[in-house]
Image (cartoon, rainbow, N blue to C red; front, top):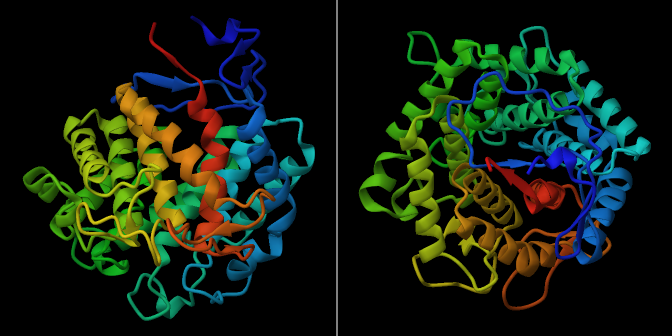
Length: 410
């Protein structure tokens, strides 16, 4: 079935229409072939419960609650007030662009996206730097200055999402300048820094830049970005043993320091690198990690049991700082990536289970406030502040239409 010919399809509270509004820049390199492809932007409209939650996510948090001043303050006046204050604008752009693609007649959100994207690009320095630190603290593990590569990762994710949707060449050039700076800074060559020493959690925070750098290669076909991705993978295996230990032990308990958010972000990057190269090892290792998490660290809601770090297998600690929203969003990303890549229905089942039973429990029905931890026992603590989880949650809600309806080869 050609999805472009569909005029109306009803799918358990969902309606799709065949009108495509947003432009999607195609990838130049895709050697790993996905089984499923997302529908064109704007084709999927969700009604009912999910549609209502998406509406308040877009209109409440993304459009009205979070401001340009909040998102860009750390870039406009360096150093920023918080070590990872720079991650928020990339997360916001990712969520806001997806939300706008799903409702492209929202001109107010479109204008805000353009204003914030341009505001971020205006903050890039001559050498390509797009972080929030003072020059003497860049790329370090100094206390309160140890998330620089991480911040650049999210700037890349946000701007590449914006570029794919708008075709704005300036956004791509900004991302290339970031990529070129990372290449000049990190590597095996004498005089370059070790990326493992530029990020917390045994380097997993920094090596998670693999995801957007792989996307940058897929969009440009420039080999220097592919080479950098392979360097990042080598270091991720030399330090936290991202590949070797999951292959040997079949459990995430043996990978790095078990920090769930950063580790799963690396596996999302490995799946992207499979798309870029066709290297089956990368996809297979992500599947092994998924199986470990699903078998050893999962609540009945489909949420990952991680008190930021993966808990001991089969313990299911239901109180305290469990089920961090950043972890749940990355789990959703991992399932979405694997569903696209393999077509295996268990990933679709997990997405359905987790979103209905846990993700939307972390989102206040007002669409503005989010839980940092959505504890399985006790009181949920909602807040409207701009913390990492409050910026992550809207991304997952905005992603829902990308996997609610997809097309296959036949």
